[in-house]
Length: 538
Image 1 (spheres, rainbow, N blue to C red):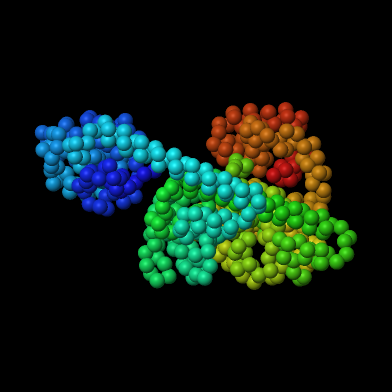
Image 2: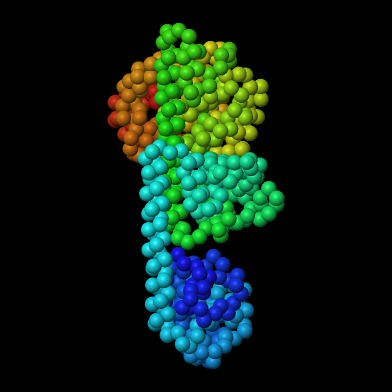
């Protein structure tokens, strides 16, 4: 878009004068021009519109121009250009000028010799010619960056190339507000990078970052103007592109140019995220398979896996990392998977600061993330809570930890992982949202720990039929009612009170369950099998 300030410098518009203070045209961008003589134009113009008028409707009372200015501000107009000599005797009331200055809204005077129709045509042509050049330039940049993408160029290379084009320093931050990359301007300024990162984290602590301009301090305590915009690799948790001193950008750089660069950055970041996640999952799967085999020198084998930093020890402990929202009924959401990706990123960067010699382990490409500790941590609860609190400060993600039991050999890590997984499943049953929960090896579930999961699934499906792993809301409702009913000694009234339904609803649901299962659920033998199957099929 074209700035109002730029329009006032065009040679053939040189006699058009700004009546308000110079500051009123700072950062005012024009995308459209309209002529109007009506006071209700607020409802009919698009944002970033400059209004041309003779002011005819204000000839008897110029102060009515004040509510008109308010209406243009509400409509996100960028200025009012008035041909004051026609009906306003060539002069605007001082109170109108003062009010426009207070609202930071520019008013421009058009000399009588400028016909509004011709002026509209001239300004519109200028805007469209500028836009055409900006689009052509942006497409050229997009092609240049696409070539970099196809050549598997690093994110650092793209950032530096973009910085050279716009002639401004650039910083790219992750969704957890950690510096991912920066332009060459900061190569010898690590303290400045650290300071800007900390200022950004503090300023937007658990807050959404707007696509806007704001100010921060440099290493000499001088004020820096910074443009922030979102780069969407994730739908809910974007990266952030910071452009320092954006006022130095020159034509034909435009918002469209920046958008093209951001698009390429999105592709590269997405690829990087997916490659790391896939590699970690593949490495973890390979390690799990190896644990169960007779491979010699497993320690040497594990050390060849780049993303798993294996340490020879006599202490290993698995901690499953989830988010509290994973305990909600609707688990499979895009936002939930994005949270897991950000947790993975956070622990990849900061994990060693909390737990020395830890490595990350992922049994599922989208979730089921584990911390594997390879040395005893005396204050484990404190470290986990610190880790939880630090992430929560950066971004609104509430981590929960389910802890297995320690084992003495790397070959037994799979047992600790299974225990951590069972500890999380127990949370689902009890809806336990405590930050830290430990595996409890007592109870029926422990008896089935070493039985193949396929056998367990077969038992559950044999006993519970469609209620073992229900797919519809109706079946889930029946299963929940059956569980509550058995947990409360088959008391219909108590079950109804807990579920907030009528007694007859409970009776109807239990009858439907008995039809599906083909047994009387109050029969002791059948009841025992059903209770065990309900526990195991969580």
